[in-house]
Amino acid sequence: MQTREGMMGTSGFRLGIYVFKDVEIVDFAAPHGVFAVARRFDPELEAFLIADALRPVQAQAGFTVLPNYSFADRPAMDAFLIPGGFGTRQEVRNGRLHEFIRSQPEETLLTSVCTGSWIYGKMGLLDGLAATSRKEPDRVEANPPGKVPIDRLADIAPACRISRARVVDSGRIITAGGITSGMEMGFHLLRRAGYAEDLIGEVARVMEYQDAYKLYRDDVEIVGS
Image (tube, rainbow, N blue to C red; front, side, top):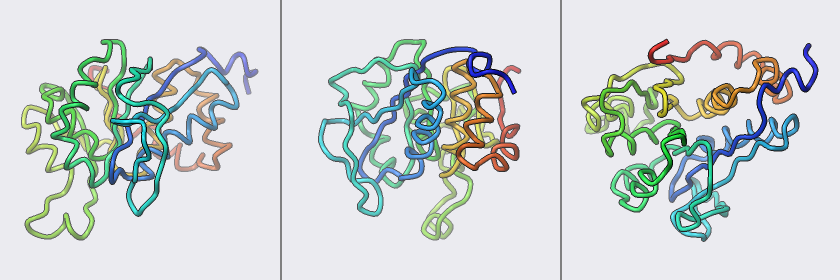
């Protein structure tokens, strides 16, 4: 195994994760958890929560979180992540969120987990790109007039090429498939940040996720590669 220094390859990366009413818990907790463990190897890594306003946010099932920043704070970050959840049905019409996204510097990655990709689709940011969303419906979505979330993405963004890969990297915009794919999004963002594969694999081992990591590691579509 390489030394800690050899495993780094880079140092520092700031991930801002948007939280909103009825956000899916695992969607934002999984990538946050990956970064939390990765910080044991590089304390310069950081993940934090951003909300429309600086007040408690109720996620699904009554789980409440406190954001670190509001839109007005305009925190600097290397990547912005939108989770999914039932709340995305309102967030696709949230003009303040759309303005915040459009205000980000070009070098800031725009990422999503699950139905978070709907927001980028609604904004027209997925036109001409490949993207994904959740593939497995719940009981409400599986029955008429419901529709599988990935098919809803196709309706929202007809100019987007829909992919069924677990993670789709289209350059600046990176989308992940379903609820637990936030784990793979976390690992992929470490890779995009320039961290060595040995370090990412070590983070997966510490999380006792190494078998799943090996299984999903190659389920990534990198557009243009």
